[in-house]
View 1 (tube, rainbow, N blue to C red):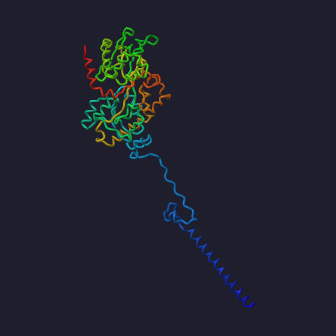
View 2 (cartoon, rainbow, N blue to C red):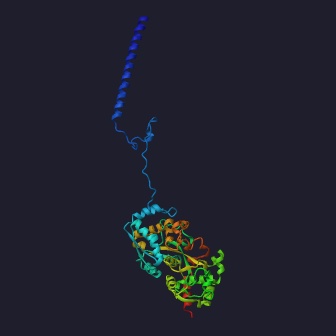
View 3 (tube, rainbow, N blue to C red):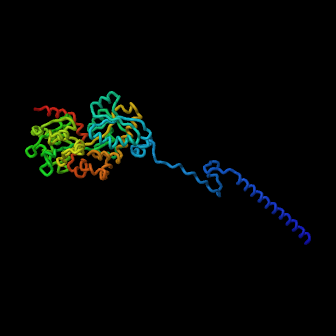
Length: 444
């Protein structure tokens, strides 16, 4: 029994040993094969879809994803919205696509158009390689005629806000795409469907000759002084052109009520003229008709007549005075007399969009570019016109505006004497008052 058991144990042991050796040999062969495969197989890229993540074994290490291409954050123009219009970077990216193209820009000539050229047109030309053909002077009747014909020869036109509003209502201007030309940051009076771009504020001022009223002596300080020849002898002039009724009436009311300038409530009365105030203004002018020695019709006539000595006191757009003073003219703007603060905007003549849609897109991109604060404010370096974009106004604190700041109608020193004119209301009552003003000019 013992001998048989011993023989059995030896057989089992030999079998187990053989099996164990065979098992070890198989493991070694499998490992060798696996190692050989790993050494020669082509790796699958991390982005391969040959093995979805959901089918990978639990012990597998997920592949590292390839980083997405960096984005510039520049949206195409099709993605702009009214709520999220084009940024300065996006507008400039679109303008790059228009290199070599052109458009026609029409303004008023003189110091104003010269300042627009220096502040906006020349930097735009240089930056984007786009030709801007300039024309002047502006003519509202010509805009209407172009729009009616449907074949405009002007593209961008610079308008007083009230006049632009009237042209828009008459169907003579293109409605702007506010995804491109946003007006969210404009002064409230400048917000309408048509205007944009180089929106500015400007003053209509009284100026006097320093030869006649030198520093250190008595000088005019109110509009009452303008009409007082006994206190301030000298020759006066006024602009008798048909659209000048609103300036003349406000001067007259400021002379009749100099105390109105002392309070916000008083100044507000001159913002929008009531029928009663218009009547009072005409009565005052009739009573002081002999004060006016010369009636002129051009915006640059007053500075020229002051320089020649033909007049001692007169009124004109403030930009005309500023340009003359910068060239050494011996006269001074009477801010304390009160000044009328107006706004200006750029429009597109109706018909441009149908005539050339690509050019219309270029024009709107120009209007958007000019209205960015850092561009909009730049006009004030060259002229005493202030920005119409609200976020541009604080930029006037920069040293580059030191020379012009005291001449700006919205500066800290001058705003207290400003009458902020409701241009739109003036436009609604313009035709009847033009007729009345012309009739007044013809009176004996």
